[in-house]
Image (cartoon, rainbow, N blue to C red; front, side, top):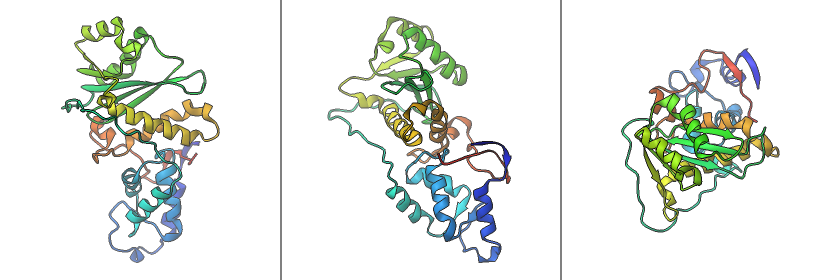
Length: 279
């Protein structure tokens, strides 16, 4: 990663490869660059494996690439490239039994889900991740911690990383960890008028959004860290940004759910402040 303003080399290569605009096939939209066959693998790697992407699925990869690039067989090439990728996201099948779906929120950050990821290798003194996901926009925050927080420490974290940025929530859903069932946490939420919802051990899918996010987060961190798992804390901001910047399963940008416009993912002015690698 190189700091400083520089031309985006990938965009430069694509532009230089098509000197004659009349040779571009029909279907290339305004703002898109036609990618010749010699550079398509490079663009596919950028759209699927770069720091901005973190190995997303077909929809997210296609969305990222289509913001700046196009070629006639792009859709089928993306499907084939993602299918051949060696990085696979594990999916745990939901347990049998009746589901207890949560109500659909009407605005961002009114209803959130929280969880704690443990069992991580020590990375710059951090061993735990607090994950918070907005059930409306699917926007998420991942906060690295030194250890499992107490109920009082959890309240401080929520104040700094949730309420300070997004306002008070109406409801917080979590599992039945000791932090979330402690009297202090309940009194803290009750004082602020926040409903506390606890997922059942038999129906953990009630908090399924944050559990799916945790799975994707851990997979992305393993991919980014490779043989250096203790570097996960330095990769965490990139993984969070990748999740929040790309479309979710409903076809909506997570960041758009909060900001109501698309986050900048590629350079459109010919310059970019950070040169992004693929590691």
